[in-house]
Image (cartoon, rainbow, N blue to C red; front, side, top):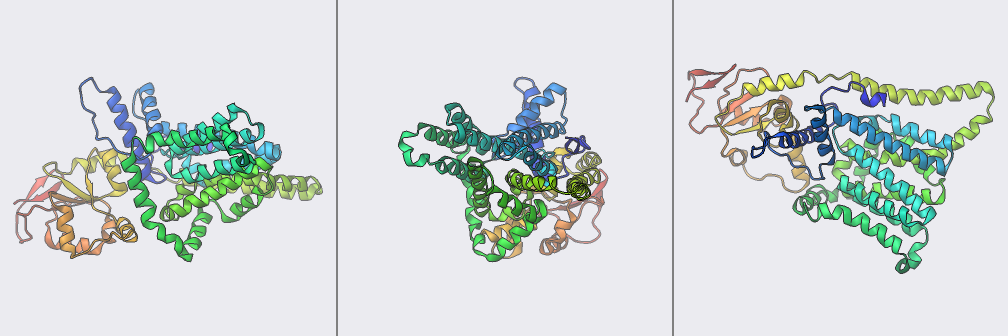
Length: 490
């Protein structure tokens, strides 16, 4: 808990800031809508997220309780979710092995840097992990006791896991099948109402939302994030890249130990663990691009590895008891170092960053921007940083990564750049640049802006170009004041 609440009040920019700021904006809109007087409009524009905004709603309710917008409360909620997941994971691992094995499983789950980062982030992934673990816990309990109560809880938890984060549907569904059919119940499927109940709850709970309420967004997401780039799994180099990426976030050596340990678990827990492994593999294959570019897409693997480490840890602990005192002390010291190093690494990342100056900087920048025309921009975090801290919404010019992804999807732009530029900037008065590195990564755009449009800002922190068709580049034109910047008079 200490790691997760360290530097608690810093801004939500330490881990995938685009995803965090999107949730922060959504929570702000909910909070302002709930506190606005009857008949008045929300202060900010609603921001759409694909999954149900459960964390955002919970955070907005907390804002009301504490009397103001304090985005760090999401860190507290996510730390609670992660620690709740740790409790159920420990109980499951201990039952399958021993208290010692459960502690080994718990150690990895609590100190892996990816887990620490995710459980501090204003993102729904900690709640997703809690529901994955609860789903596994109740599935194993149902497989062991065969009671209706366990079946219903397993179905509800499994459906809720998919509801919280739809992208893990393959993982959860394959796990349910592995536990249910692996127990031999499939032979009497027609006479097993509990199996039907578990399956119906698992599918129907998320279907109400994703198929009933957001079908258009869901199908578009599946097409854009999965089907259009599915060809990537045909390349052998994709798998080496995937393994290298996993090594950075979960440590491949430990991952393989967890996979080995999964085969040593008790029968029902082994079926669960192997279902988790197969489900994670299926999810990664269906989302090949994000599996190798977005670290939080690998976070479902954390409880999977943790559970598999329990029997491996038990073997090592049994061996430890037979060692001479001196060697036992060496082994214990090595184990403590294995715990201390990743914990210290997480701590160093947390305290080594300070984003408290960001709000004032973006507010000052926003105050320098003109308000007499629509604006298209190259700016950080898909414009969410400017929107959240500066209160200015802009339309985005695609980043180099977006253009590359469009090429992967077979939707790269054709034609002359000038025609593409004219099409994308039609109706906009200004072109704003706050991310200079991104502009440098698109030299054709940079050259086009400087060659055809006057720069009307002398501020160091941003560039502003006037796209008005009446402006030109003739020398000697007068400049008029625009706050702390300048604008070329037309």
